[in-house]
Length: 273
Image (tube, rainbow, N blue to C red; front, top):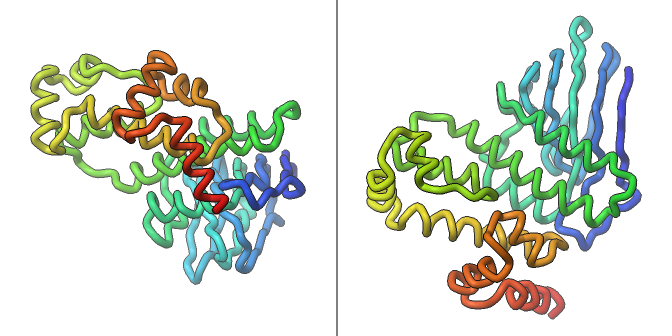
């Protein structure tokens, strides 16, 4: 049995919205077995190879290559590799109020395994951040929190796999590219419809133009960065692909009614009352 483990338990800070506790890669053997009862943690574990068993809350699952299994707060669980084909898996363990909120908002209750859902690029990014010895813990949690959100959205979209209408396909394109700059011409080429037709369908279905929806979704994500990370206004603007900080602040104020800095300051003031 070989493992690469990055341990942050000793840096746990109850004031942070998310705490990263452990991350690593496990090359399991036939003796690999973990059992917990009611611990305050969440975990994503992606199976790169092999097979095994997850017993959680009186249910049994058989995670294998390209599956994700999920450990949830206060759950009673036991998981172990098969003897013939033991797991190779990459994983992250975390907790915190923001983590709990993400699970409640985006994943169906009692979601413990997602079949055939490749999140390896996200998990590799987490390991890369966790291995950076120059990074302080607050910065590490900020960066990994964003990736955890992306994983949860990816899992949700995978679970909701269905035949989408054209407006829903447009919305999915916008949601997937929420941190990028995307034009209606890009979506038009991707879906094979004219730009005007896409705008018309989307407005009829959702009651707003694609531009307004995309801008508002970016502002909602900006709020989460303001409330749950240490990123400054310029960094948030760049991360969400706004043309510049001034344009981002103008968009934010037009939607929310106050500037990003006022929004962050007001929230912190409420938290200290």
